[in-house]
Length: 483
Image 1 (cartoon, rainbow, N blue to C red):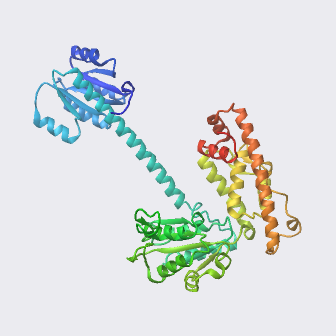
Image 2: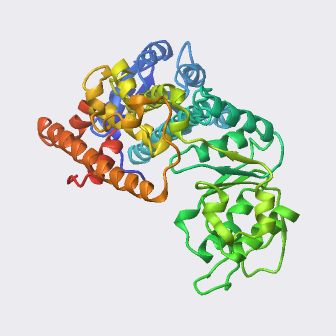
Image 3: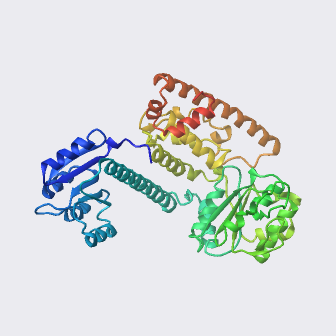
């Protein structure tokens, strides 16, 4: 039986004779939290204020029988369990009451103290389990509703902000291809919204109610990616001790999203080409083909030629390139920076109850002056970090101190420079690494200062910063601060 504090659950004892109530009090007052009522009317008044786990009542009482009391109590306290004490073996009535759920257990009088104590403990345990299950169901429903709202909210629909002409074109192409079964290639630089586009295509398709299965291809090397996507049979290779269902089978009827694979092995490309051509696939080491209805969305960085080069099979490339969608970098869609920043701030404050609710005009100017080599993902990180550093309701420019000065080209032009050559890209990457180090150092100092103000109390620190504890612990660990 569960380890419960029996006295933390209220038990209402009902009888029309005080002597019987006194006998109950004498037998069980040290073990249970008891409340008493002389008759059914008084019991109903008690239940108006008492969240009883158990209602223990005598059956034969003037004015209102025990069964009638439990029926009426069920309407007031549906979770409470009824235990009927009776000296009369009125079996048809009791059986009907048990089957209807009105009575949890019945005990014939005179009752045995040990037996009744065991029944009371068992009843409380059942009540506690029911309450916990109800709490978990409510919590699950809350999270499910939240996720549904996140997915359906026009602002959160793929987090695609389409103020710029470039993103309006992307949105149009998503709307054109989503209702079809055409496989899609999404091209874009690091930090672009490639997964978001893939999800938007899935949500806008007839497959919406079916699975959306994502494979983070960078987590697998060589043949491991082929096995992850297509599964394998026991004994197909050393270590294959059991059959394994592949992601493509899990996505049957829905969408399979391959995030930045490549360049894939020749065997994997051949399997993908066959899947796209025939809709058939087999697990590694299995001769049996399976007919699968899967829509494939593949993302690459920055495009298929550069990601896979000459290693791509022409047949696979031609099938993937039927409907490519190119995502422009953030530097080509500056009209989206402001609404994206506002969206990310709302998203962050909603999840972390952060006090900062807006960005100042100066903060927007500073954001719009930055080239964002890390694209939308970098913008989101910048806004989240600023929300942590801010102390008031509004994020000010100083909270974006990690944003470097306005690039020289922006002082004389409203357009970004032409595509840099490879050496300049290398320089940019080096500067960005240096910037990341500076940002981490700024955040580390802020975290240490907050930790000191709170005397090392991390719960108080989370409240001070307006973040959830899990977010705080993750940040502290990431910054190398002992948690």
